[in-house]
Length: 228
Image (cartoon, rainbow, N blue to C red):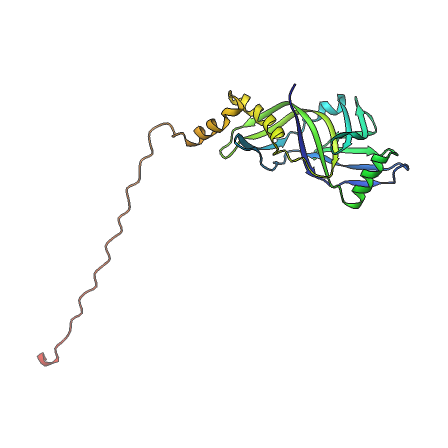
């Protein structure tokens, strides 16, 4: 089974009502076609990532997805299974939008109050990659997520930055497979690609320009007044 990866982003969370009185939390969990920050693992490689507009289409219809606090299964706020539950996930032209009907529980009230106070202003999602595509690029590889299987979405106190080893290595393992090597070989392959001499005859060197010699001024003629 493919490794679980985490992605996190700041978001504008909206609130309606109060817990126990039909409260709703909503906002974007992910945004499409926006380059991520540089993701990396020390000694292996780095890359940027974009999320394709169809990446969540299947998973939001079929998967069993929880809404949690900090990805902790002990703090569950909601669930959607086969498209039914108190969590609604809807991909649109911007990204993956969510709504949560806030339950009247201690965990949900705590999260709602933290959002209201501004203590929580980021969301994260955990996923397994189903399909992706890589472009090696000149400066660094670029990954596009084509399809993912969501495991949960989370309201997070601190973002789980994807540069951490577990997250970056899972993605870089996919890149290594796309170029036909092991993940440990990536630094050598990237170094070879960037230092490889171009094929074909070397370009003709232009002849150096020779600056024209400066014109010599006429020598000054000193007239002897005693000759006239």
